[in-house]
Image (cartoon, rainbow, N blue to C red; front, side):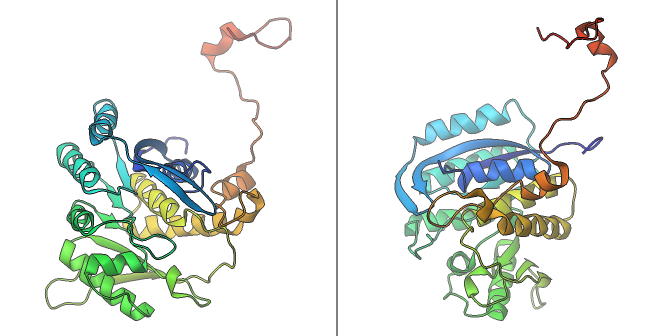
Length: 304
């Protein structure tokens, strides 16, 4: 990272006290792939690897205060949006986006629980569809893609790609279509952009083999945050997705090493980073400005 500008990436999402999803996963993802993470909380979620127990949504005026506190002081290079939950929360974020106009916006539309239950009422779903138009990239899973399209759930990969193309064209947004909910040995993803009227959508596919593991908690949060960060580093959308998927794959493979929880555990966000770079600090040559902290008798420098 020497000599490379570090992107400042803001996550707007709910919490996960076990650290596997939500803003906790986003901050780990942003750091793991080379960004500086910041977070604004939309909801306090009492959950663990077995499920959600309770959700508390703070007043939207406090949400707005958080958002403005960050953007009034820090230049934001990219935004990742996750759980919003209510119409008022969605509209508060939308108003802030219109005011600040961050250069990169990635929306992970949290609309369907793992159980298959819909998390938003019809008014909130409509508000979230409107928010899609403010994003550069949207990253729905298959059930969420169907809701955005106002269509039945796609039954196979070809139908997923076709539905993603319609969503991309309708909202003028890039869609990262994800095949994880299809089942089977393959777990492909694809970056889909809407074609002009009467033309086919452009599709870049990312083939992948399904990893057999229960450590899949927070994969959607983590992937979208990583893509936003890689894009903030200057990668094209195509390359940002490709690199983020490579990072996510190694993180999923090593998730079980963490030994966290009894249900669907988290991924290991730093597995590859730790393996390649380690966690032990290394001596460095002292800069001239540090000379005053050195001892001349050969003993350790004092810190004060």
